[in-house]
Image (cartoon, rainbow over all chains, first blue to last red; front, side, top):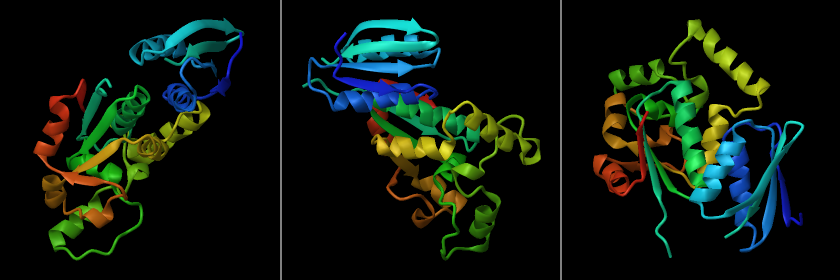
Length: 75
Length: 159
């Protein structure tokens, strides 16, 4: 999947994954996609809720060897 | 344009752990694009105190309060397991181990994300704290300032 920006929050604890994602998203244009990497086990719930409330789109998310990947398209 | 949502937190507690919870929620709410206000009152004011001693002119009682209360976020005690100061050391150790953020870091992050910090002037007077003793960038206000924000708040917490 093509992404415009990769945000690596691996190893960081709550609330940093969401905070970093928010800061990164602010730098993108509408329609662009960022990929967020996280190792926080709570981040699946966190990102689903955050994307829904902030009206962006969680294109997909996956987990690979303990690393969660979230693809978020900016509204 | 859609009106931004609002989160307000009354930080009454001067416990390290409770203040951590307050500032984590504040940072999270800022990431949700909320306007966030933390209204610090009573012991919560010590969270916003400068670490260094500040020269002020005040009465003996106020000075004594100043000596007895922790000077700044890093000096706060825990709400549980204080253990004569061992508890905070242990918590700071596990915070580092798990790559979480310390309270001073969380406060800095909140300020960086535009969280509005308001100190309650009435309790500042009671505890003998002056504006110069608090961190820079803090607004002063009273109950009306808090209610002004909380009235159209979507999330209002008392910690």
